[in-house]
Amino acid sequence: MPSKLYNKILIATDGSENTKKALDYGIDLAINTGAKLQAIYVVDTGKYSSIPMSAPMEYAFSILRQEGDIALKFVAEMAEAAGLEKEEGVIVEGNPADEIIKYAENNSIDLIVMGTMGKSGIDRFLMGSVADKVIRNSRIPVIAVPLKE
Image (tube, rainbow, N blue to C red; front, top):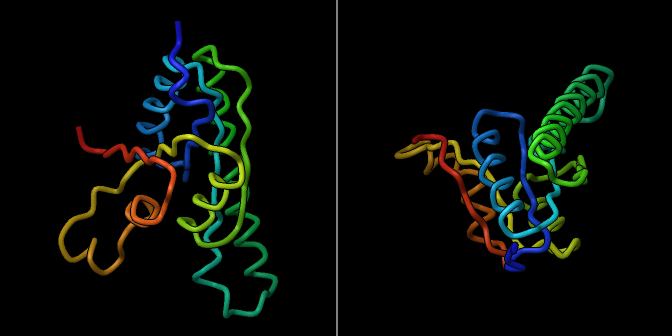
């Protein structure tokens, strides 16, 4: 009998290999706890917020949204193949860490599952990571799945 520890699990996806490993982990958790799986893809607009929208910028954003559609479709296919009910997926725009947290808080998410880039040293200091920011700022539990075995 599945546990009711989690009712809703959010997979934060960017379509990368890191996300695929986190997705496997999230699917296993959903199966074992009877939770519903949801997915979010964030188009990072923070870097471009001060640039006026032009035709090339709009095209770039449409490409990012298409990547989001592909990433969410992959999550849905993997969840369905594992026998989970159809999961909900959403594409939002903004700062990835902020949007993941906001979505989780506004949608009664019990657990956030996401991959990590495995950065260390100066790269981690200079750039930080979305996972680090979510872990530090979320009131909802976060499982960060490292890419490295």
